[in-house]
Length: 318
Image (tube, rainbow, N blue to C red; front, side, top):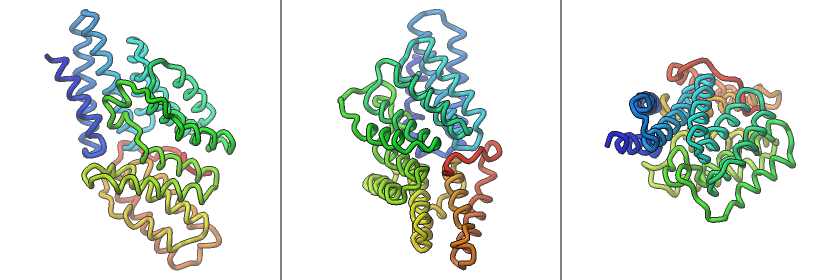
């Protein structure tokens, strides 16, 4: 019964991730990981240990994700490695694939895109993966190739991500879902960032607008703020590439109203990229650019107290 409750709590946290305060997710995920690890110390029953390892791995994966959102890249890496290890112990393909995908994502955030590609390739070889798992890995691969400046490989990964349609599912990405899922709005948002790395303003704008359209079709209480905010900022970045200051400001307005606790690392680094772009010689003397830059700095400063650590390296600059 205790294992049943642990399973239910882990699944609930994963599914409520995008609608729960980040620091509350952090607290609950850390608590659940501790409970799972404690249970593993108290039983030698094979089936119970298998369930305990799975719950511990899922909890570590969720904790890794929230540590990244809260700005602690080293903790996120360590926890994803823990999740991968637990998945290896019980030979759980989807958990190992998720954790390796997270490590790939964290690798290009740490300035190691070639390592990210290798980790994705490893993740794609694990057994039992459904379409959603493969889509997520291909999206991460596309981002990694974007950081490497490999246009052909990045665009191929984006196309392949959009073409996963075998109908296969797995018990983590599909059945648990939530933070482990990778729905079409998240795919579009992530692909917008890849197009920005490729300096493709049209592709980025189209993907960002698609993400926002898909998110807008959901009930308001089911729209993930972290994803929608990043999509708005990527839309602004696409317009900035074309020199459309009015369009940049319009795209950023919804982001500026996001509460400080929801301004995750991905949002802050995207905002930093906009701020850097506004310093370009084409905009430097424009009153609109100066005012917008000041607002971005205020936005970032207000969010700084909501982070676990200092700012990680930029991962989205071309």
